[in-house]
Image 1 (cartoon, rainbow, N blue to C red):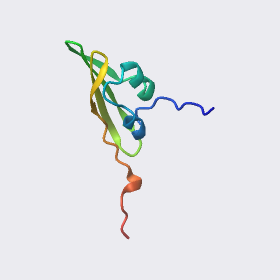
Image 2: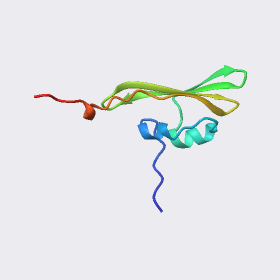
Image 3: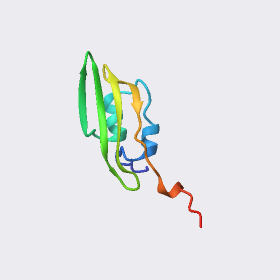
Length: 88
């Protein structure tokens, strides 16, 4: 069987796998451990992912949970220099 890829929040495609109502554990399995977890009170929490990404610089994204289920997703803005047009 194929080896499972390591969880990696820096992978743009991994963010596409995150869906509403997904559990905190499932999110960690896909994106890895967040840089920090903010307790927002009343059953709300936020996973914050941030760091340097080659070609994009410092990026951050976060996912908000209510009672350990995803309800809001803010994907990082990845800039892919390979997509920039070079005019000569």
